Image 1 (cartoon, rainbow, N blue to C red):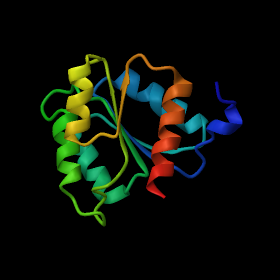
Image 2 (image 1 turned 120 degrees about the vertical axis):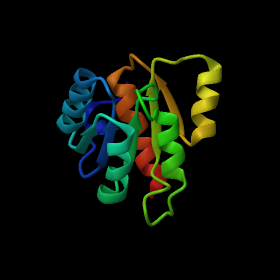
Image 3 (image 1 turned 60 degrees about the horizontal axis):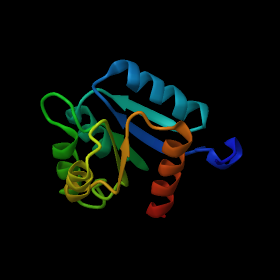
Image 4 (image 1 turned 30 degrees about the horizontal axis):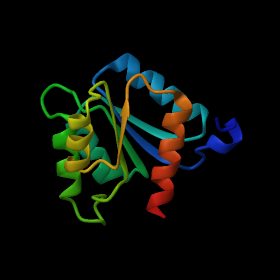
Length: 135
């Protein structure tokens, strides 16, 4: 397990996407406590606009959402140019835990697939790794 000092997210811009408002608020609070700048949105549409306008360092998204789901979101993001944010590192955070779900997440464009509920240290470490992969 990492120490709190190892998990500091100071200066990282993290975009959170989840249609479950309680979960979204908890995640936003968690990331803010560890020093991240957070944008928390409840739909894929808002997330796509945030990628274009805010340019997050890491995207953490639920995949099962009404309307446009997380798979469609990441496909739209990956269609963007690098300058528009199309290569933002992305983590699928989902209750869908079968191997086929992992494969679908990777095929859509996510680099990591984490199952809910997730240990906060695991999630924070994954975000740090994703941010480091961008440099």
